[in-house]
Image (tube, rainbow, N blue to C red; front, top):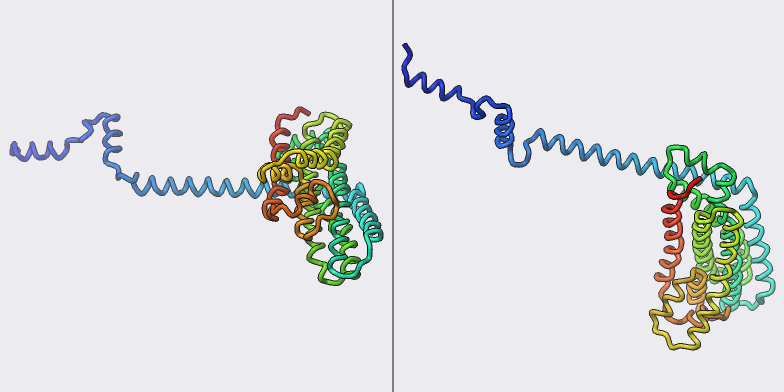
Length: 329
């Protein structure tokens, strides 16, 4: 016969804290865990975080790859349709004509007058070229049936919009650099290397204003249901930004004494005005007349004007990327 004390000790040692109930066992296991979840749980959490991060990186790379493929396709189509050659020739011809009739005074002052004349030319010509290049970016591809095929592939519609914009922007920027670069070579030959900095400022602003109007054209092409509607809206946009806005702003400035914030808002509301003020203020001249010539010495910083042009590039493309998701083909 065993000792009662020994038997009771064995019973105490063999007694389960959960009483044998499965729910109680789970509760006891939970209470017995370490406060930080234990090594196993920490390892699982870390593995999950690494998997999420890897998936995010892969998704970003896939998105960039798809945007790049669409951009390259758009660029090749534009080159094949002779858009790049036509825009380059247009800028070369008009730039050469402007240099011929803008005077030949030797010296830095003469170079600044020539660049100011090119600025006036670019303010009319480049927005029109950008709108003509981009007004059919979405609605034209839809009429051709190409857009329905692309949207049926595993690619986001917003990626198609961004890729389309970047591809056509490469065409426009290349034509601008080559076309006006010919004028820049003539300016350097005529006025010396000292005129190069003024011309480079003009060239950068020209590319920026072209990119801004290409974004506006892309947005109009996303909203329009027919190519003729998109073309009409693009022409109205050109008339407003290039002709009407400056006239109205100049009348408001002449009639009322506006605070500096209101004057700045008038400039930022128009990419052409921001471009003109940016280039003319860098030249230190008010050549070209109009509202922007009045504001050329107003103290608007080059950084704020550059940011305004960047915003005019990004915001229309972002809005078009949102609206294209609701477009029914």
